[in-house]
Length: 388
Image (cartoon, rainbow, N blue to C red; front, side, top):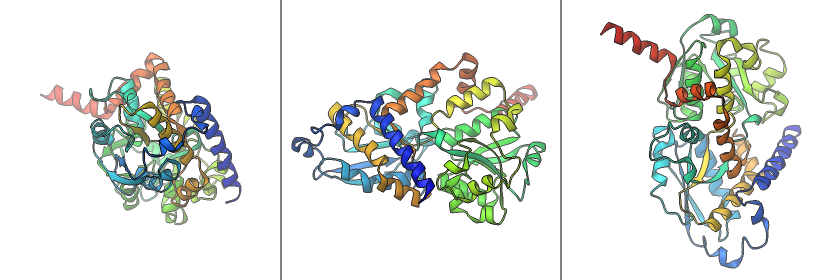
């Protein structure tokens, strides 16, 4: 794979080292006792279920089905793994269902990391206690390694100036409870000319809807969709406006995808870090909240139900991290246009706690984001009260 592959391998090694140092007792499990014959009986002949909080075909579903292939090789007894989909409520349906699932190591669940942040902010449902689950980690959680961009449909917007001089540009997402949905809620609370709407079943549906012209702008135009829809850039159907996260195109995976290539060639001279190019459209408190929210820029958190015995959880945590850091898994994910930026369970939980360190003004902004309210919706509500 050339330079991009060498870069990714260094990231894998750094992620592995970070996960082993930070723990969840993972480092201690590197010894010979983990896969002793007695432990091998735990999964031999059993079936492990991985339950996904989204519909089939999206990023989480792809990760789950690749985990089903690679994870058994790192579990004693090499169990069979079955994948099921439990979409609903921005993954809340799946998170709640996990509370009723067996705690014997035969069940792995997934929900959006925003649900954890909502728990820290006191905005999650009463039944959800973010620290009661056993976190395996995130495959796409090291967000500083990921490019995010807001892109426009050229049938509606030609450049950044067109975007800024317009108003109420339609931007659709899955749900205000997902990671990408929270980003959209944040944008709708600022001075960005955005009109938010929700209801798509997964990331694949969002990208397809944008391709059909159902919305003017989307953030679903990074490396993944750039490879899935090469005509967007080849035929000038899509124009990037600004970005956030890893903006160096030489560090993107794959490094030669159409979006990264266009950035490298200066095809869109206005494109840059939104903290600089459009900083005036949000307050300082809003920017602090945005950066804190994106300390976990991935959306797919993999967890165990409450009550899984410590030894069983430790074996699963190590197996999960080893799988995410393996070359075979990385290659399979890359072939499907998916990025691998692993975080251990300990790293995942630690990044959520950064929300607690926010200044009060920034935390207040996040509370509003996690209440699923937007500034434009509140204005409409006030008008209704006056007329009644």
